[in-house]
Length: 440
Image (cartoon, rainbow, N blue to C red; front, top):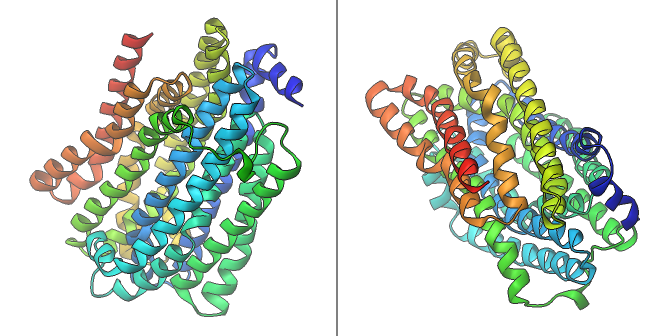
């Protein structure tokens, strides 16, 4: 099994190798988008903007949990790819075991803190008098499920790192199918609304985690979650955190920026918050596909960098970049002409539909080039370049986006909020290209 995977990394033609690794990852991301869209879609069938807004308000907390999953999943996965290139299989087992138990512990801590500080979290996230109770019901369930949400994200990344992209995709797909089945039952039939959406999300993640654990036990040739391999090795911890923390900052800053955006948006009305929420979910489709493409190529990049085959690594980057530009451009065109219809799918509210149509025609401006940012970021992660990886992770949703958001809201009101993201995206892409030219 190891020899077969090494053949993908070393000998298979680059386009075929990229697609073999990336397509299952992209399918997994597509499944993840459907997973997120399902909650918004079925909550939207209640035709209650307050409940749709409540899901939007609590999204930053969910992103916060994904950030912790990134520490152990992306950080551990990037190191595992390099270890495989060096054929150090013993360290692979120790790294995967540490990532599992580290994620589990952090998840339990998140549950405790979220339950204790829930009122503070909801107030900071921008819950209004109309949305507070709905958001509280949703967040309480998500907090209880924090450990499986973190593990559901991180374990898939570890499995993908050893080249088992299909198995990682299947785990995500399994959870999504469960989520889609449970959503209408719990949200509409049982009448639990947003709380039903949260319960479906947690159960779906639990099913994914159980599948991943079964794979670790029976399917993987090199990964392990056995406690016998769990060690506090300073090199392993340092390698995981040096890449994982910068990678997690992207989700953390996305969470923080969404909190700021929600607080600004709520001043223009709950309909604006709902519209931003719907558009954010729709835009997840191309963004997650671009992330999936880049992350799918990452093991190939890391392996060939570690084994000294820089030419093959650059060929993989070039091919991946061309595909990402095509995907981004295609979705920009589709969203421009179908924006109104897409919003109507999720909620039949005239005000939200009108606002959503305006928003979507702005956020597509950066889609054709956004894949460049994803590709360069995972390349830095793959080669262990912690500093530029950190800079890019805090750029798009941090020191580029937040100032643009603050300035835009102050001088241009709601229009400033709408244009903030594409302007920040373009700035972050320019920074990524600059950093890559310096390091290469």
